[in-house]
Length: 499
Image 1 (cartoon, rainbow, N blue to C red):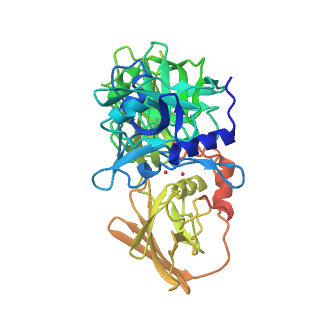
Image 2: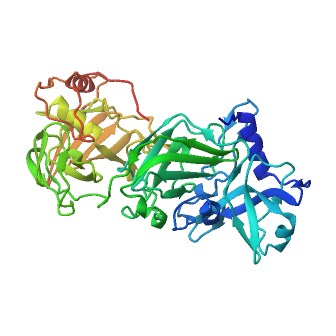
Image 3: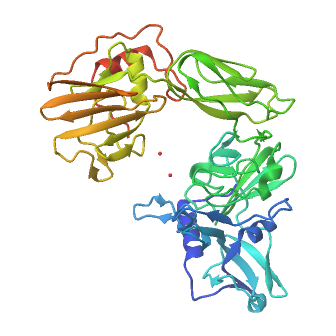
């Protein structure tokens, strides 16, 4: 087994990135680094007739992140960029392309002189641990299978497969990847004998996450078009090995058995409906004839044929998953929303509490589904990357809320707030001020306004959680009754804060 240390890895990274004036020569051979297009880099490595394409990226900066990793002053490994070890070209509209990798090579001195395009050849002062042998014909370079001087490293780890991922049609997660090294390439090998070469950014992510499109999903969440020609034939195959290429050579995880279920659609369409008791239908016309369907949503939901039925369902977003009980095909998902025209909250003493007649379950569900809050004329999105203006557990109005470095509340003392929540057809509007709390509820064409003196005492909610509380509409999951009671009755000083 090959032994790799952090120091060796870092040294190899430095060799690939820094030009040297001295030559690393072995007879008539010379060693250096070249900018190798992905198609050429993988040509001798794969059993696959479709070349590996460059990576197009519409994002502004990620494709530029090709700095290599290194050992820091503290002796710890510092990761390189998301596209470490690659080279690129500027594209249109601020985007660009990752063209391939900058990797060590071995080439005859005479052949180097014959090259019409030397591919940014930069000489190395020492013979590298791993390199690509280069031959030249008619002035053009061809790259052979990687030479690994130390021999292939055998990884001990495991791999899991998902066909329900935002980043492509398939994603594998590998534990036990090579540590303290930049990864220049990944080869996915199958039992059927076809191999697939993976590229930075679109396919290779950090922490052993690897995803690719196989011709069904067209775009990933950032809007980048997935290049799928090289990977289309992966559908229905079984992964047996995953090989990582670093500057130390090959590191391979063997003995895997990851089936890639056939994909026939990226998603299914489900109609929206009303919360409470009811049903919605979904389009199952795309399901293959031998697809043995089993549908699931959440507790309180049943699926029969193309109908989803439910009882006591809260407003919010839900996800229907339809799986093939035979395991031949990938599952498909469809999102839908259940709505209500009721507003189960009111403003009182600095927070949103249960409205008259609303349960603590209703209130907690509303708070969890808040999607945006407008303060004055400025709208702020809620959620992980938004502004935490209303605490999603306690309903407290956070007067110290920030959007970036900007204070949401400017200190003027009186503000109009408009709250939007997923699944709730009407927005809730109210005003807060130093001297009075004025609550305005918009219900169609009617407006009700109540004014009372402001107090500093927090009232305890009088409505107890019912033992038969309906299911929440947050991510299609149920909240425990005890938690809901706490969420409505106490002020918890918690705030939840993912590329």
